Amino acid sequence: MKRLHLGLLSLTLFFTACSFDFVTSTPDGLWDEMKLSKKELHFGPNGGTDTISVKNYSSWWFSSACDDDCANDIYIHPDTLETGYTDFHNIDGGWWKGKILKDSPNKAIITVNSLETCESEECDKKTTSRKAVITMTAGDIFSTIMIYQE
Image (cartoon, rainbow, N blue to C red; front, side, top):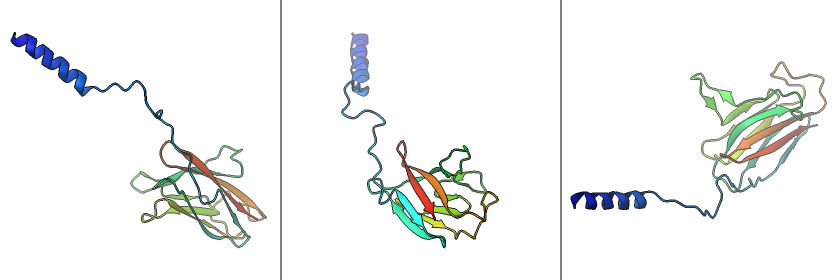
Protein backbone atom coordinates (compact mmCIF):
# COMPACT_ATOMS: atom_id res chain seq x y z
CA MET A 1 0.00 0.00 0.00
CA LYS A 2 2.88 2.32 0.81
CA ARG A 3 4.41 1.59 -2.58
CA LEU A 4 1.15 2.39 -4.33
CA HIS A 5 0.88 5.75 -2.55
CA LEU A 6 4.55 6.47 -3.26
CA GLY A 7 4.06 5.55 -6.93
CA LEU A 8 0.95 7.73 -7.27
CA LEU A 9 2.71 10.60 -5.51
CA SER A 10 5.71 10.23 -7.82
CA LEU A 11 3.50 10.25 -10.92
CA THR A 12 1.59 13.28 -9.66
CA LEU A 13 4.82 15.17 -9.00
CA PHE A 14 6.19 14.15 -12.39
CA PHE A 15 3.20 15.41 -14.33
CA THR A 16 2.81 18.63 -12.35
CA ALA A 17 6.52 19.44 -12.49
CA CYS A 18 6.73 18.95 -16.26
CA SER A 19 4.72 21.34 -18.36
CA PHE A 20 4.13 20.30 -21.94
CA ASP A 21 2.98 23.22 -24.04
CA PHE A 22 2.26 21.70 -27.44
CA VAL A 23 0.50 24.82 -28.72
CA THR A 24 2.49 28.01 -28.26
CA SER A 25 1.12 31.42 -29.04
CA THR A 26 4.48 32.71 -30.34
CA PRO A 27 7.05 30.48 -32.01
CA ASP A 28 10.54 30.45 -30.56
CA GLY A 29 12.85 32.92 -32.28
CA LEU A 30 10.09 35.21 -33.55
CA TRP A 31 11.47 38.61 -32.55
CA ASP A 32 10.03 41.98 -33.47
CA GLU A 33 12.00 43.77 -36.17
CA MET A 34 14.27 46.49 -34.79
CA LYS A 35 12.73 49.93 -35.12
CA LEU A 36 15.63 52.29 -35.74
CA SER A 37 15.62 56.07 -35.50
CA LYS A 38 17.59 56.03 -38.82
CA LYS A 39 18.82 53.29 -41.13
CA GLU A 40 21.44 55.45 -42.85
CA LEU A 41 23.95 58.01 -41.64
CA HIS A 42 25.36 60.55 -44.13
CA PHE A 43 28.53 62.55 -43.48
CA GLY A 44 30.33 65.21 -45.48
CA PRO A 45 34.06 65.24 -46.26
CA ASN A 46 34.85 66.72 -42.84
CA GLY A 47 33.30 63.75 -41.02
CA GLY A 48 31.39 64.22 -37.78
CA THR A 49 29.36 62.40 -35.15
CA ASP A 50 25.78 61.16 -35.23
CA THR A 51 23.59 59.03 -32.98
CA ILE A 52 21.22 56.27 -33.94
CA SER A 53 18.91 54.41 -31.58
CA VAL A 54 16.74 51.33 -31.49
CA LYS A 55 13.26 52.20 -30.23
CA ASN A 56 11.75 48.83 -29.32
CA TYR A 57 14.67 47.15 -27.50
CA SER A 58 16.29 48.38 -24.30
CA SER A 59 19.82 47.53 -25.48
CA TRP A 60 21.76 46.37 -28.50
CA TRP A 61 25.39 45.81 -29.45
CA PHE A 62 27.74 45.62 -32.42
CA SER A 63 27.86 42.28 -34.21
CA SER A 64 30.20 43.07 -37.12
CA ALA A 65 30.84 45.55 -39.91
CA CYS A 66 32.51 45.85 -43.28
CA ASP A 67 33.48 48.48 -45.82
CA ASP A 68 31.64 49.00 -49.09
CA ASP A 69 29.11 46.20 -49.68
CA CYS A 70 31.06 43.45 -47.86
CA ALA A 71 32.04 42.12 -51.28
CA ASN A 72 35.61 41.32 -50.24
CA ASP A 73 34.49 39.26 -47.20
CA ILE A 74 36.75 41.25 -44.86
CA TYR A 75 34.75 41.84 -41.70
CA ILE A 76 35.44 44.22 -38.86
CA HIS A 77 34.67 42.77 -35.45
CA PRO A 78 34.03 44.53 -32.14
CA ASP A 79 37.10 45.49 -30.11
CA THR A 80 38.90 42.83 -28.09
CA LEU A 81 39.94 43.85 -24.59
CA GLU A 82 43.31 43.06 -23.03
CA THR A 83 41.57 40.31 -21.06
CA GLY A 84 40.75 38.53 -24.30
CA TYR A 85 37.02 39.19 -24.02
CA THR A 86 35.19 40.98 -26.82
CA ASP A 87 33.76 44.41 -26.07
CA PHE A 88 30.57 44.45 -28.12
CA HIS A 89 30.03 48.13 -27.20
CA ASN A 90 32.98 49.44 -29.26
CA ILE A 91 33.98 48.88 -32.86
CA ASP A 92 36.68 50.58 -34.96
CA GLY A 93 36.46 50.66 -38.75
CA GLY A 94 39.59 52.76 -39.28
CA TRP A 95 37.88 55.78 -40.80
CA TRP A 96 34.84 55.45 -38.51
CA LYS A 97 34.19 54.29 -34.93
CA GLY A 98 31.11 53.14 -33.08
CA LYS A 99 30.38 53.25 -29.38
CA ILE A 100 27.43 52.31 -27.19
CA LEU A 101 27.36 54.19 -23.90
CA LYS A 102 26.64 52.27 -20.69
CA ASP A 103 24.02 54.80 -19.57
CA SER A 104 22.22 54.68 -22.96
CA PRO A 105 22.47 51.05 -24.14
CA ASN A 106 19.87 51.53 -26.89
CA LYS A 107 21.90 54.28 -28.64
CA ALA A 108 24.97 53.97 -30.85
CA ILE A 109 27.28 56.92 -31.43
CA ILE A 110 29.04 56.82 -34.79
CA THR A 111 32.06 59.06 -35.41
CA VAL A 112 33.49 59.47 -38.91
CA ASN A 113 36.93 60.98 -39.60
CA SER A 114 37.49 63.54 -42.32
CA LEU A 115 38.40 62.14 -45.73
CA GLU A 116 42.01 63.29 -45.23
CA THR A 117 42.33 61.49 -41.88
CA CYS A 118 43.07 57.81 -41.93
CA GLU A 119 43.93 55.65 -38.89
CA SER A 120 44.07 52.30 -40.63
CA GLU A 121 46.35 50.75 -43.24
CA GLU A 122 43.30 49.82 -45.33
CA CYS A 123 42.27 53.46 -45.81
CA ASP A 124 43.03 55.06 -49.14
CA LYS A 125 44.01 58.71 -48.66
CA LYS A 126 42.79 59.62 -52.17
CA THR A 127 39.25 58.45 -51.47
CA THR A 128 36.44 60.85 -52.34
CA SER A 129 33.62 58.78 -50.88
CA ARG A 130 33.31 55.84 -48.48
CA LYS A 131 30.64 53.47 -47.33
CA ALA A 132 30.38 51.02 -44.42
CA VAL A 133 27.78 48.53 -43.24
CA ILE A 134 27.37 47.94 -39.49
CA THR A 135 25.38 44.97 -38.25
CA MET A 136 23.71 45.43 -34.88
CA THR A 137 22.10 42.75 -32.73
CA ALA A 138 19.79 42.57 -29.72
CA GLY A 139 19.93 38.80 -29.29
CA ASP A 140 18.49 36.75 -32.13
CA ILE A 141 17.46 39.82 -34.10
CA PHE A 142 19.79 41.75 -36.41
CA SER A 143 19.65 45.03 -38.30
CA THR A 144 22.10 46.92 -40.49
CA ILE A 145 23.10 50.56 -40.44
CA MET A 146 24.63 52.16 -43.53
CA ILE A 147 27.31 54.84 -43.19
CA TYR A 148 28.02 57.09 -46.19
CA GLN A 149 30.71 59.73 -46.47
CA GLU A 150 30.83 61.88 -49.59
